[in-house]
Image (cartoon, rainbow, N blue to C red; front, side, top):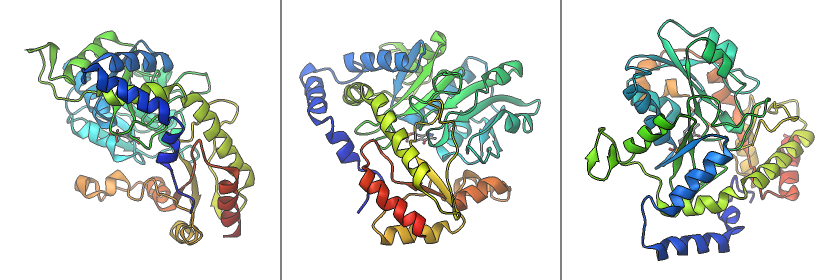
Length: 365
Ligand SMILES: *Cc1c(COP(=O)(O)O)cnc(C)c1O
């Protein structure tokens, strides 16, 4: 059986170091906002080439708190339009509707699954105040920052799937715009052993405000200047992330090697492979996503051969019950993507033998 993702085996690589890190937290006697969180915020900011990082409870909260803070700062107001790709994971959209912002769903560029300058241009109106760029599947969005600046649009990134990816100019995800949300959900490329997330930004005031908002709105214990929430990165997860961050770049190299191997050897006219710029580090392969018109048949066929795959995602946000007002909207490219995509097993520890089995099965389909 080839698992889609063997998280236990991935974490087992670092078992001794992780145990040691957890033991240190236990022994410290300090379990919230301690040294591990401080260290991780420093380390991750450095990793993303930004001034500030604020640990929060999960990736969705990271995005929700960014928009909440921008509204408090007066940079956005309720009802403002925010451009977001229609084919994203629902969390990107929830972060907007939670803040009473108006998502403007746009069709992605089908070759990258990401939004493009073109798609922003053709969908912006005088009410459009921001763009939420999602680096889907681990592939960096093209550099839309100059375009956003020139058009007075705030650029926010959903970098939950793309730790360490860079655009063609070498700019790290998390450093493109005013702020970015990251997730360290266990299955993400940088994964904790539970929920965790972070915001990165070069704006110290914004970072300070988000940090307060995630800690009951308090600047100082029991002095509350905002109506905040409780969304903190916990000490234990931060200690784990400090260990795993040391290895992310070597893991990205392995993911990219695995992706190139698939790319070279999968050869079946029924299967469409992903496109990316192999000259630069613009895709960190959180997911290796193929397209096939007979996707459901293909998935069952692979399952019968002992190969696990996952669909990211089966239903686009505008067709979800949660957004019933949008159910009559039509996004043909997005709907087609959701009918055809299939994510193959990929990880830093996938073996050539496992990949050969997947490739053989695909080529025989
Ligand atoms: C995982 C993910 C999130 C949410 O992260 P959580 O930590 O699960 O809350 C947001 N956006 C995208 C694109 C994601 O993949």
